Image 1: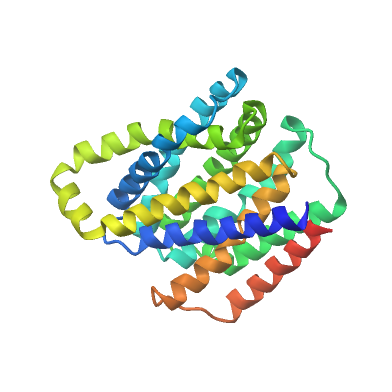
Image 2: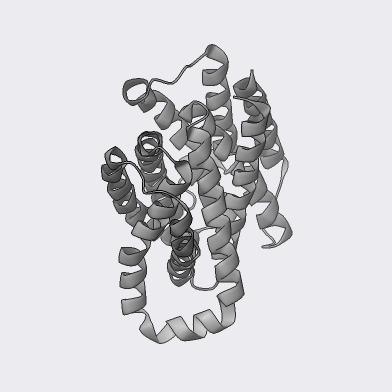
Length: 279
């Protein structure tokens, strides 16, 4: 993986942690997630006129990814209702790189190396450690843990689907824009229909935050999709999960969540993993 791709994926990680923090900072994470998804679709819609249609072979992947994302969005809100950002977020992000790396052996033809595998493993261990894996084993935050780990499987699933889809699309930008447009109506429609009374007041209070989170979401995953066409998917998936470092810092500085020696150690392990992936 080149230095330029690495830097852009790390930027995407920061953007991803930022929109997750914006969701967590709201008193209604489910409604906030739905409005974010809707805002992302509105941002993408006019841009479709400037890109070609994705190639035909990519459309089954687009539809499959949009379906998986419905469950992902639902579990994001549920996980954040049950636990801290700096606890739930790392658990959601720690295991997908290993799942992607193992499944990618059968589904993708990416190059691999001992350094890549060691880096992916180190980043995953660091992410889990930073998120409090020992506490999870002691059954702390049981409901948040269950939702977060369920989401980890969904993250690995849509990452693999989108890796195959974006490579078949012929244009990463068009694939990403259509994905955001397709995955919005079902989830947003269900949430808005069941929470109609709260939508207007929530938008009046959080419209600026919602638009910002939507833009960050589009930018973060758009970069990741592009990177999947330029580098091994396992490396991209692992580097994206460095977002937990940013999430932990945001959780500490803005949301007043604790940050201690365990998370410092986890961050150091993640940094080691980044260096190994770059070898």
